[in-house]
Structure formats: C-alpha cells, structure tokens
Length: 261
Image (cartoon, rainbow, N blue to C red; front, side, top):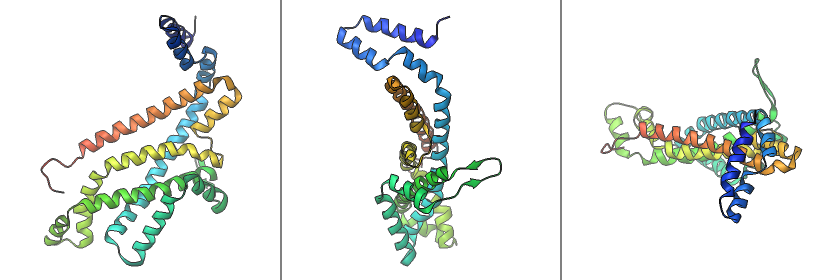
C-alpha cells in the first residue's frame, strides 16, 4: 500500500502540472521533496516532545508573570514612596533588557539549581528559562494591569468606600474584577509573545521545539524547508488555539454595554 503522505504529494504535484510553468515550479518548491517530508513525519514524535516542552515553559512563565506582574501593577497604581519607585525601576530594567541576556544571566550567572518534585525533576536550564521568561513577562504584565486598574473610574472606588469597605476591600472587590476583565486583550497578546519567545531558550541549551527542529535538519540538511514548515504549523496551531480560547473568554467576561466601569 502506498504511503498516504506520498500519495498526497503526488496529487498536489499533478494539480501543479496543470498550472503555468513558473507557478508549478513555485508550488513544488514550496511543497518540498516527498522523501524529506517522510523524514519529518518519522521524527514527529521527537518534535512533539519539543512542542510539549514549549507549552510547559509558556504556561509556567505566564503564570509566574501573572503572580508577580499583577501585584507590581497594583503597587504602581496605588503604592507610593520607595516601594513604588523600586517596582517601577525593576520593571524598566527588565523591559529594556534583551530576553537572551536575561536567560544567560539566570543560567550562567545566578545559576539556579535543579528542582526535584519527587515524581519529576525540573532541570536547571528549564528553571532558568521559566524564571527568565516569567520575570520578563511580569514586567510587561505589570503595565497591562497598571493600565486596566487606572482605567476604572475613581468613582467606583469611592462608591465602595461609601458602603463601608476599606480602601483595600474596595480595590479588591470593586476595581480588580473590572480590571481583570479589561486586561484580557492585552494578556492575550502577552501570551502569544511569551509562546514565541520560548524559542530563545536554545541559548541555554534547552531542547524546545525550535532547537529540536534545528537538530533534525542538521542531521538531514535537505529537509530544512520541510522541518521549518512543520515547526511553523505547530506554532500556528498553538497560537491560533490559545487566541481563540482567550477571545471566547474575553467575550464571555466582557463588561456589558451601558455599564459603567
């Protein structure tokens, strides 16, 4: 029985034969060689492990960024004095430093240790990658939350105080829920950026999706195009899926028209 991938490529090639010569050549150049695609498909499990690692680093980094970034944004809005200035300066430094520099400092200078969770252990490279990407994301998320917290009208805070809530309680129960709902579009953009930035962890030797792809076409150089297309398709699926999920979340929790915020 013929291989389905080979049959598909042959069918596309036959369609391309009916096109003008230039278009047919361009189509075939885009598709690549059947043998190279077979090589990529046979190593899909190897790339799949890299994709899982990419997803894990992205989720962990985004969560770390949220845990650090949301309080930092709140401090910049409601804080004052030394703490507010310290948070602002740290954020400026992190946003102004290339992510590859942050990763190298975390891994080679700070030297974060391997974390043993009993069932599984997290390598020092992965820990450094999550910390670097997470702190960088926190610096940007703090600005997302600073903007959304500031966008809630001061009258909302005063209304909370007028019914007996303390300032902290008014911020927590009145301002924060509205700010979180408004932050979804910015958070969606940050999630996509972190997902793509995971490719930079190759600098500290972590074998995520792009690194594993490079290993493959180093092994068989004629499959460079096919490997890159396959990796691009995986990134597209991950980005498209998360964006649509966050779009749904944003629509579901959107503040209804006519309601003050």
